Length: 299
Image 1: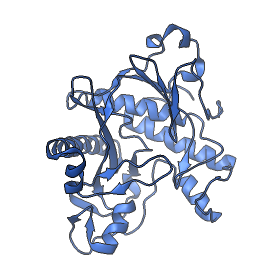
Image 2: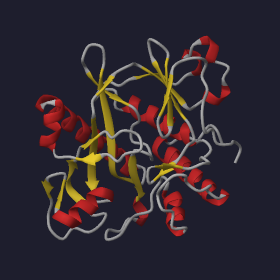
Image 3: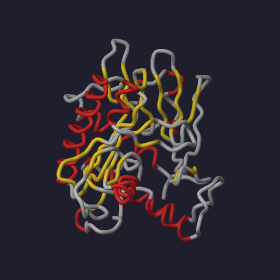
């Protein structure tokens, strides 16, 4: 492993706010999104990160932003160092892990699309036979493929809190019927296109979440990250078997380790052992190479 994990970034004197993974800088006429190597599980950020994870998230998002540009406009301006303000171009830690983006007013809905029954959707289905108000066929198993993908929105929670699954109708109350209909139709189209492409690469896109905003003209644009291992469930096709949870191209090793040591899911998180870090890094990079068909440049 050639690099160490970047846990925080420092970019000049620009105003900064941080999420679980990204540091966001206000450059005045644009935003700079820097994906660190922080990793969270069960809503707790671990004290050590996964080297190059931020680069994987950034490069996969950039790949999909370009691929989906004909379907919906997005906030990405550039991932090229030469496009940064001159004072930042020599900052090597930014290489590969930043997106220079247009500003947008965030639409406060997490746009979740599910093609398979997993996670909170599976939990909700077991209790009621429904997911976000949508009645599903009886006797589905964990990880079952759905006949058609379903749009299961959630409210965007404050940091440290859980997103809450809501019905389409509740979403209409929050952002209006027209916007909610646009969000649903765009999200399902993007998921369907992404799922078909991923299948060609031997990957099942089980579910994902999209985020949207409005630009200065009021147009709806795709923002944040797109179809990454942090925002999606990617499963290898060759081991898929419904009736149980599936191995995935993300933080599965981290979750399994935390379960093994009976982590109580409250901060602070434990330090992740080197083998867990290495295996997790390898999974993220495998997701990048499989999806994009490119070698990972920072190996």
